[in-house]
Length: 239
Image (cartoon, rainbow, N blue to C red; front, side, top):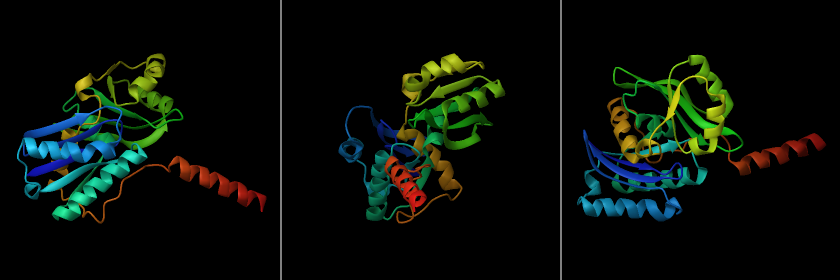
């Protein structure tokens, strides 16, 4: 099974191709460029390097959210366009699940945190049992101190990763009473290889969709939608 993975849910843009248990190629960039400028050129470069015929891909996996609204739209549009052009199914992988999968078979609890602004993070809580990723708390948008409180109650060692770590590192140091650590650089951000590898399990379980069906999972409304809702609420209160 050959799966193309895409992740543009955060600051990192990443493209990978996984065939069965082999990572054939991965191109990951964490730099100040918009993903619309990088994602397709990265895919094109990989295709040239490994002489990839995209028609041979079995499925296209994409980090479906949560994350940056713009990044998710770019990743979704890219995956949908490829799926439609190639007639291939899509596999939607929860962004936070894929982040946790970076730390395969960790003996600690895993807590990815993505900065969602306003002291909130996109997060979930995970562990590995029997070499399988177990979801202890599904991905959600929540206050960072609430996450820390839950982890402290659990009392188990925790590994944090994600772009929320540098933003909330001081709060974690101040409030965590359970033992914790931070994942190192090579596994602490989004990787399309994790998206594509996790997608293999999804495909085996029949969790695929057509390009037409695919929609990103934002988890919460965008700032523009929230502001519009507040305006509408005020207008209703005045009438």
